[in-house]
Length: 197
Image 1 (cartoon, rainbow, N blue to C red):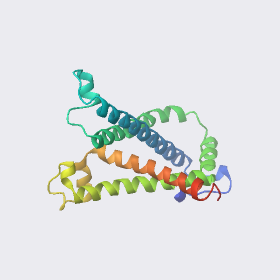
Image 2: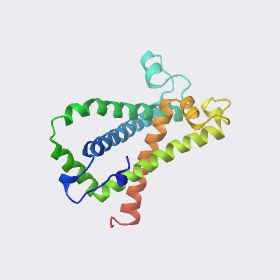
Image 3: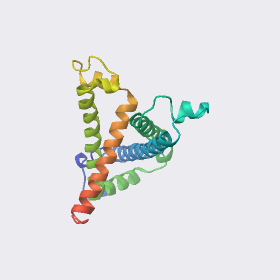
Image 4: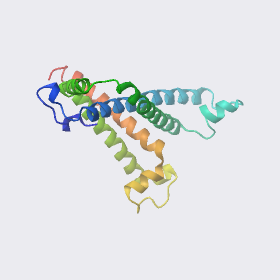
């Protein structure tokens, strides 16, 4: 979600689109949290692959380390699944949690969100990272479709290519890109700029 483009008023009670602003923000953060937990799970699975590549346990070979898995497939599969679970779980819980709020509470919270320049910067960098992640996936698939077991990938549109790549790869690349964008923001704001605006 790009918070930069939402209209922001001088007073909280005048804030337009408060439900859209807040819902978009919460779903964006749940997507990032799911991608983070999924990528952490993927890194643990990669460690298991290095130390115990095979096992006679059916649960292990079906869910933890499927036969023929590579570190890249484990990381992409875990990150994509985590991002979808995080987004889906919050989308299911959000109406129940937020139905109790009065309109002025929506306006106040969304106004505070847009008033915080650090939050707006995190949103912008995270969204830009997600777009760059999906763009990088499309470029990689166009240049080397065999990596994703694709044929005829040079002639199709980007949307058809994304469908062929599968939802896990698309969500994983968006999730990793979004997390990379947030890490880039933290390095820029607090490393290069020393936390100053």
